[in-house]
Amino acid sequence: AQTVTQSQPEMSVQEAETVTLSCTYDTSENNYYLFWYKQPPSRQMILVIRQEAYKQQNATENRFSVNFQKAAKSFSLKISDSQLGDTAMYFCAFMKHAGRYNQGGKLIFGQGTELSVKP
Amino acid sequence: DAGITQSPRYKITETGRQVTLMCHQTWSHSYMFWYRQDLGHGLRLIYYSAAADITDKGEVPDGYVVSRSKTENFPLTLESATRSQTSVYFCASSVPRDRRYEQYFGPGTRLTVT
Image (cartoon, rainbow over all chains, first blue to last red; front, side, top):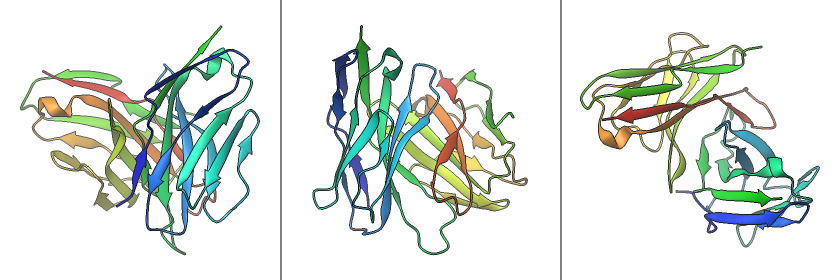
């Protein structure tokens, strides 16, 4: 069975600075996807960034980037130039690739890291 | 563009009562999911559905029942609510063969069982 671990329950960062959120996972699969979801106080789940395991290049989305280390089973999220609107709970999630006819995937989430951006 | 909606947004019920949480999506996504969110556990999958009349268990299915007679609706029923089912429940949907594999989440339902 796959597991996802986020070892930092809470973090804080000053506005405009950079912060890195950690995530490790355990799987015997070779083909899978990793995600970071953001949950602001509104409770809405928002996809931040996605990484395919077969791609060596780290994904980036504007101020958000990941450091994907497949051998170490590590998937950290870096937020640059932190903004007050980045204050949220962040979840790391794993999805197994179900093969050629994969029609959707079951997400396995970590426990979450609550990030506070301070002015 | 309503997207994915859940009702009610808040619900208080008593132990032993039956309660149904509704989920409706307007995109005709074939895959739909129910998750529960609890402190220290993140989100855990309860049930999912690949299409109308096709459902399967997730990680924590005990005490829950689902049905999917129409593509756009995926209700979750707690047949006899227990205090341990106090949680925030999220419905999600996804597009077949969407290479982003993104799941789109509803706003959540906060359920309290007293």
